[in-house]
Length: 329
Image (cartoon, rainbow, N blue to C red; front, side, top):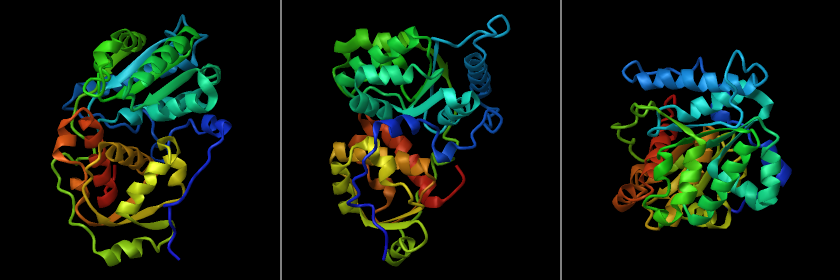
């Protein structure tokens, strides 16, 4: 019988949320040495040097006379999708080891929901560095909460490292009335020194077309392999409304191949953003996708790709392309 993920309702204990703050499987072997800077974009090699120096400061806070301590400081890796920001963030976390917390922005906001603000701050203060992948401010509540959390962690001597497609001072633009929260946004920006990484999508997907959709029988066969799951696209999209994005990782645990029947474009932005979160968790786990119906390149509308979340959708398309083609990434 083909395995299913539709209907799963994973429960994650607060202690497990803390324990899960480690780089995902896709970046399990990420290191500064394995990052391959593009010689046409010097900012990439400069970023490796800057992040590795910062990492050394995290682990050598007692040797300040030899190397500047990173305690209470922050760096912010800004750049387009596919330039290796998450690779460098994971490399830093691996370098620091057990005293590094690594999670996506949504995972930290969920931590506040599970532990409360004070509990989250207390838990994160035990780490030497907190790494925040895909930092973005999508609503006023996140803005106020994260501004306070960043400030209090830095004041406690915790080093902070974030990645984003958006410069700190421009967070929230096009998504909510960001102008009304400039004090909070600037408070976030003041914690970080920005490191900009230039270059094209290293996955090489920028202009490559998606392959033709698979046959239905191939999708069904994908669900029958070890670790395979086969789902109807519409049923999966509806089921995601019942699972908090912070639990999407647990939702797809154990999946190696995901077959999707009857893919079709999305018209609802909330649904599209849930898909973005799901794609990130599938990509983290190196899941291969076999899909029939419409091409996955069409799931986000032209209006979505021009709107305030366009960078999220572009990253999701790049990652979907990687998982559909099975090419190294």
